[in-house]
Length: 414
Image (cartoon, rainbow, N blue to C red; front, side, top):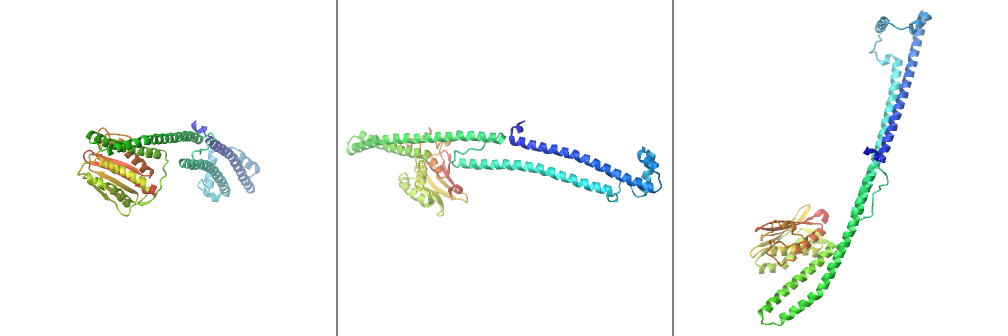
């Protein structure tokens, strides 16, 4: 049976078996003792009865014959009638028969004590077993908590042969595998960060040269319309490439946890007002409306620069997917448990097939009319918000608009 694979279970079963065997032996000895005691009481009673009969003139031979001869039913019935007339019958109270009363009290107490002792041994055995099991579970839970908080070298004690140790062995194997995976993942992130950094730095030199060449061509002020047109396109593409390289570096550093957040208490309304100022000119040029509604009393623990960049990317995305006459709203809401920042627009919306993938890096929708983006801005925003302990959700409907909701739980933000 599976239960007997456990050393602790075997120990408990063996102890219980020993207690049961001891109880049986004690019970047999008790029965023998009761029998002997009953025999002595019976003989004492008969001896006293024989003496009383002798004093009343009954001969010794008649007394001996009466006690040793087999009694008939008639004799039993006659004796019963005589004793009943004297008040002795089967329902007589024990107190009227001192021998029976003494016998009853004596063995009632003995059996009660044996039962109490037996129950105490059983209860103590179970209690010791449960406490031992509970202690090991508490120690295992504490070790797992420490493992989850970064002490990846901790392992559970699995030196015995019981089922709990087998479980601990499996957990230790899983922890080792997880630690190896974490180390490999960290190495991969470091490699990715270094690779992207190297590539980005290598690209900066030719990029700077191209920007310089483009500026020289533009400053020549040739009358060739084609040259001017392509010079402007080159400048735009170079700016786009520079922005992509900068974002790739940021994403690589975020993935490798190489950016420590410098959190402090920030007034969310003031922070968003600073950000909105950067977009009011664009909104005016594109004939769009940008509004901000946020209570003065909303405070958030955050790294202002990184949070502003995360929100800025989402607002830029809203501008890119709205037309002239559309509106973009930034709304704050605070509850006892949550701070919610919503960025709404009534633009073109996101196709339902794209919604599950909007935060994937370099994802470009085949339904989108905007071909200028890099496909990395929303990925950066999601990563930055999650670094702050928050989460981001998106809801959208074609031709009606999109809502990005940034959720910051107060429990993780305090």
